Structures are given as structure tokens and as C-alpha cells.
Length: 174
Image (tube, rainbow, N blue to C red; front, side, top):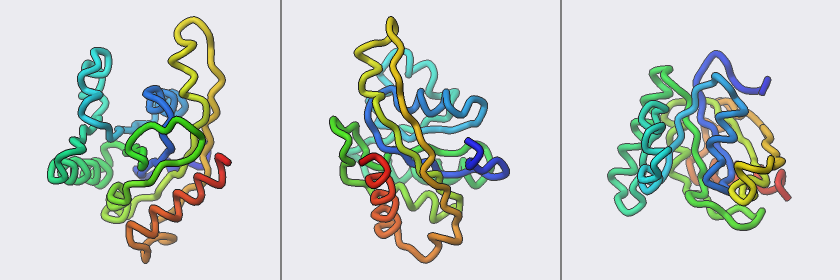
């Protein structure tokens, strides 16, 4: 956690293994504010429906590119106005294996637009949480791989940045 920028908001990227990923990440950082971008269907989950508005979670309709763009603009606004950091799962959906899915490069435009640092993280074993919760604890591994300042990616287009970060994450989880 000591690598995390404390003087500025950032874009946090992580692989996606289960519906518990964002809760594990939020628990790890304690009082550090992170709003996650998520699919709109998550808003139908009763517990999530009550919590998400207060946590500044941003909903994305995967079938509506214009609405997704608006959500990304709102995410950038949250970072630029020092309201909260934003967390994304660039795979866009949970993966059943430890292999990464393809990344959606558009989420990296949030960092490029805001010039925010990118906190690259990886999570393992959250897919086991739902099988054991609430009766048995589950050992989950969550690592901060790197923090990339804007100066290191300023000349990279979103596609190249996406590929670079995906390679970092895949090497870490393999």
C-alpha cells in the first residue's frame, strides 16, 4: 500500500476474477476512496444497489458506446477534481482461469486524459470467496505490481498502454 499515491488521485487497474474483487480491493485500502466502473447489471443486486451511489460507482452499458464514453468522462472528472480515484477491470468481465482476457483499451483514456498515475494491481483466488463465504475464510492474494507516473506513458496511445499493462499483469500472475 505504501506505493499508492497519497497526494493525487489515480486510475487503478486490476484483473477480474469474481464479483468480490472490488470489495477485496476496497478493504485493502481502508479509507482510500476508489470508485469502480462496473456493468449496469450489477446495479440490480440488492446490496450493491444500496451501496453503489454513495461510493460513486459508475455504471457502463456494454451495448451503448456513447453511454460508456459518458461514464469514462465522469470517471475522468472525478479524478481531475480530486474527488476520488477510479478502479477499472480492463478485461471487462470475470475470467475463469488465471489467464487474462483481452483488455478494453478505452479505459486507459481516463488516465491519458487526466495525466493521473496508473496503479497496476493483480488479484488471485477471489473466485473461491463465493463458494466459502460467509462461513469459511478464503485466502486471497492482492499485489500492487507497479505505479506508473504520467511521464512514463505520456507518449503511448491507449492501445500500446493497454498492451504494456496487460503484459505486466500476465507476467505477474503466471
